[in-house]
Image 1 (tube, one colour):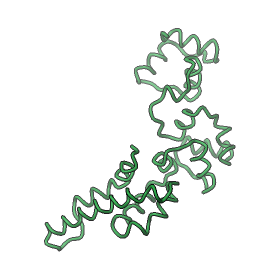
Image 2: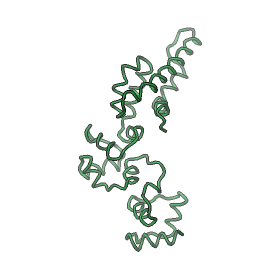
Image 3: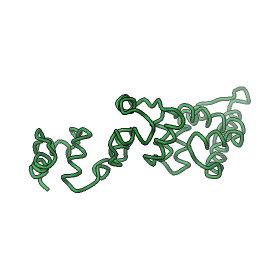
Image 4: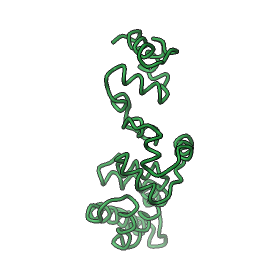
Length: 205
């Protein structure tokens, strides 16, 4: 469909009286982005789901739009007031309690990496992973599994491999330094990107 036809459909059927062909063209070029309501109307005009028009969703708003859930419905299913939910969506700062957080992941079917990023738990995950690779990974698997809502069995091989990788880096550092240091640039770089290593081992971006 041509931009002017899409714009006409959004105006005539979905009340988007301000939409012109220029809006559609700008969205197609990526020089502008539709609002949540505009995206919903655009998807309806094109007979597709909002998620079909988006790349991989990253934010709470994008995940909600991709699943076509109204903010009112999501807030109710999570156990939040609409105002509280909208504040979290607008600021990108999740402040829900443990039950609300679990409900969010379940309702939106969030992949573990997105769940951790959206709920602001990335620093805690990094802390646990750093302790796991630098000490005994087995002692931390339960806490990590709980944090990312995964079974411990799924995490055994990734954590074992990461522990081996980090310990190998540290052993090489000690060898080069004559045993006088317990850290090095290679090991620090590994720790700095430890969450990325973890998702890569799990097959996530």
